[in-house]
Image (cartoon, rainbow over all chains, first blue to last red; front, side, top):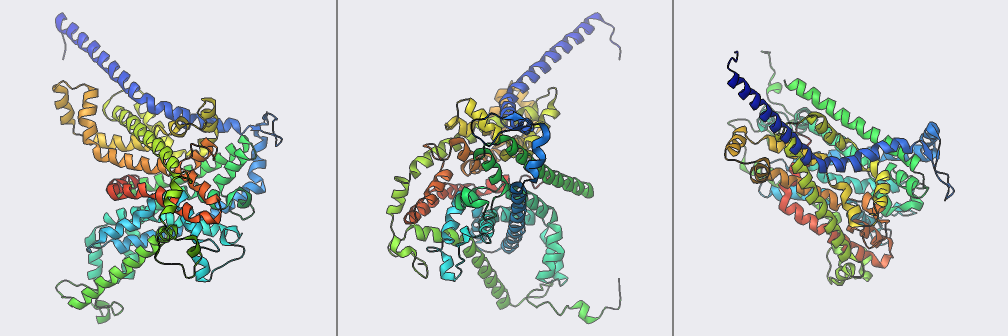
Length: 312
Length: 302
């Protein structure tokens, strides 16, 4: 279509400028709306994230008062290979292995149990979800008392390790794991229940009609159909488990954590920063935590992508 | 299809009759009732196990010190000592801790709702350069846990003079990538026709945001609000390091740590403190269970 008349052409030009100024105003408004969030992210997420890489290059001498000095990459290997760090990483891995599978299995069992039409099932669902709102401090106080050698349930049950569970190098970490499993149970239940709701009931009913027993149905139908949900719950709770810290801080404390093999990764980062005053080494450890989180998230994303692919 | 099927294939012998509900076959009434009783029994055992720690905490918080070490542990406080709660509130400073937690939590929730609505609106309704890049940047924040950034944030907060202040507790959490993602999804659900109609009625962007988009996204806003509240109230690492651990600005979580650290005689007080700190969240769960579930499973759906 050709425009011949001058008047129309200038009209179109006017329309273009009007459109451009509207777009400009729209972009201006967009940036205005984004400023608060982006400023917060810039100052408290991206800046500190990248500053970790700078901090790594500086070492603070163990003697108080001396300034940090540039050591380049020379601090990285010694920090990563120090017994303190390797032991902490091992502790954290053991902790993750203790916590994650059990909390997922228990959450799944409760979710399957509560996935039926019964009067009052809402109350049970509420109870099974309830531990999700418990903070690590509340859970620690609750279980700290239950594990207490004099007051708690343990002496009555005849379980009385000496030294007491939370001061015992064999039982300190498992005790903290039990607390964390209880705390994670609600989340695990909620995620598994949501997944179960998306499994068509007809499928399970059909299997039942075909004569599949409860056990077969669970392993051959529910678990495979739920695998994306289970995988999501696995990634989320593994990330959370790597970030655990509060229960060790409250129930075991700075003096004992390393001796009792309960110095989880975050605990090591905090003590390196605050007790040993070495932000450089703390930044190196924090970056290891970041890489673990990143790896787990990417794994989850690839899995989801593949699933979307299959679905198409 | 195999034609030579043995009878044992048709009727599996390892399945009890009550498990099979073939079409047209009536399951005896008593066996159905038996199964229902079994279900309730199993569910109740599960509920008792999950709730037992909390139950013993409540019972123990009401026991007089002399009964605390009693074997077997009392299942019911025959002589409830309510004064442990008032002691926890006053000399245990729970009142002050709760106030600090409330101020911090409400500031964070309000700030996150506002910044998320603004940013999500821009991403959902406006055209501007670098939109995709900036959105990916917001999502990228989800991959950087606070445990990775707190080292520098501590320096930043100190140099701003915010160490041990409400600003220091709340400002680092003013924005959330999760909230932006959640609300953008909700805004994108709003039909194009509605936007057109609002524009023809002379609605500018601000009016459309406040009068149409935000009210329509209420379920997602509620989900985000509940999630933010839970996360902020239960925070542990940041309130611990950003206040130095023993300060008038301790949150409830850090306050509980102080209570645990004191002598064995104070155990009922610490337990009362845990119950007090837990109550707001139980109320939250009772009122907003649906929204909480929504926000916690938001990442599970593609």
